[in-house]
Image 1: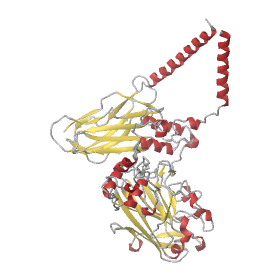
Image 2 (image 1 turned 30 degrees about the vertical axis):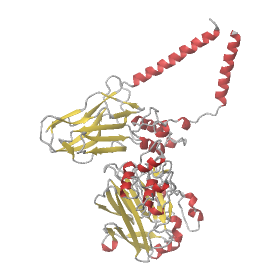
Image 3 (image 1 turned 135 degrees about the vertical axis):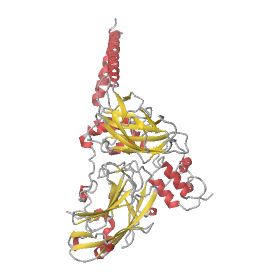
Image 4 (image 1 turned 90 degrees about the horizontal axis):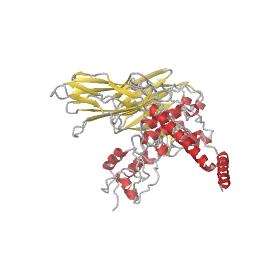
Amino acid sequence: MEKKLISILIFSLLLAVVFTLLSPAKTNAQLNPADANSDGKVDGVDYTIWLIHYEQNVTGGKTKGDFNNDGKVTGLDYVIWLNNLTNSPTNTPTPTNAPSGNLFQNPGFEDGTVYSNNPNDLDPKKWYAAEGLTARGTGRIINEHPEMINVLCAKKSPVKPLEGNCLLKISSEVGVKALAEQSYYPTVIDGTFAQNLGIYVPNLPENSAYLQQMELREGIIPGATGQVIQMRYQSLELSICVKSNNTNDCKTFPPLTKNKWYNFRFTLIKTNETNQSRWALKIEDTNSGKTFWNSSQGDPYLFLRNIPRERVVEQIGTIFFGDECLGPGGPCDGKGVVYYDDISAFNPGGTGLTNPSMAGDANNDRLVDEMDLEIWKDNYLKVLDGQTPNPSNSTGDFRADDTIDGLDYAIWWNRSGQNVPN
Amino acid sequence: MPTILKLLFLTTILGLFFFASHNLISAVDEENPVRLALVNAGGSFFDIQQINLTITPQPITKQVSNDLVFAKIVVTYDKDKITLAEDPKIVTANWGYVVKAQGKNEVESKNPGKIILVAGITPNQEPISGLSLFAKLKFKKISANTSGSTVIRINNSQSQIVHTPAQEMTRIDSNTLSFSL
């Protein structure tokens, strides 16, 4: 009997050893406690997941940023993320330095060389018709945890504000190049380029060091030196710079107001046809009528390099916006928002509400209005757990996906002013 | 004794040994208290008073690590006597990621004014050791009643300071400021 038991024990041990040897070895990444999204990397995406759940009690362990699995997302989890990040040099996101003038230094745009004879760049499959959150310091988009909607809309008609197809590339940079040759290419060459840009200033502390930047660049041309019109706001201070011919003219404006939309119109008018193009720039706040920049009234002009006319595919018209993060203003919190003005063209997708017609009517007064927007603002970025569909609507989660984000805002926007049928 | 019982006994002893050694190490690592210090230790409260909030790790019994990488400091203040003159500022030259910096002047509320300051270092940034300026708070006096009253206090129960490897430091003092108004 004893020999039999020993035999069984030895056999069991051997079996365990064999199974251990044969079972696929888990990689370090899979085992990594800070890899919240289990993509095999510990990076800014995992940090953002931590940030979203910071100071919350959670049940999802590391998938919710609770890297030590104690049920709470705290600074301890942050340090676990940091340690795993710095211990994995190949996975460490490279902080984005302030733009030095070379567009191609910005991550995500390496494949952005675009010419009219390259149809691949017009292929929407390379773009994300979605929203995304800019990963801090990486310039990348975290699609798993959408922030506000960063969209760019382009219209084929020239000399009009861009609208129409909304595209978002997998980076914090969005280019209008996709429709360039069909839209404003001849317009830019021949004289006028106009674009509207809406910026929403979120309700963040003034010193939270967020930074949003919008640029109109010279174009996707190899060797471009990056003359740009650059508008950025940080800590509610708006500055507009025109980099031209190695000079950098900047103007700073009074603080922006939080929780407010600003709609800027950029107009560029080519003023001569010499080899070195000169463009008159006008930047207006279309809400207040205030002009921030006007070359014809003393502000600097934008000069572009000597580029052969046939190569001026997108002489002006590349927009970059995003959370620059490690620029002159220091680190950012990744929560800044830049909207294009025509958000109504953006399709936020369907809603999971049991009564979809109620979507947007958070206070259930049968009208989608500013009151509902206030509720959405109060709950923005909150993650709901276990909510039934219609109560989600009452919190601003108009899509009933348990996350109150920019997609919900888009639903509100599209339905605002409408009555909800009984 | 049957061989099977001997094997079971040996396994149990080994298990107990590993369990004990693991918990022994954990206990040692936790002995790393840190002191929070406020540079402005008290005195007369000016009409506008700036408070430099510093973190000073001071190991008492055993130095494991002083490398601070994450801090959350919650400050409460008597909003009937003082108010924030401007929003609190975390010193970003020392701390990389500013997760949160909030201050509230809750006039209607019976609760005291509350300031939440949260920051961590960024990847590749040197951990912070020694005295480090964490944040600047600027208050304005709004009442002249009572002298010598405590108007600013660090809420230790809600604050958290973490060093690397991820371990929470223990706070040892009350961190109370007394100002004569």
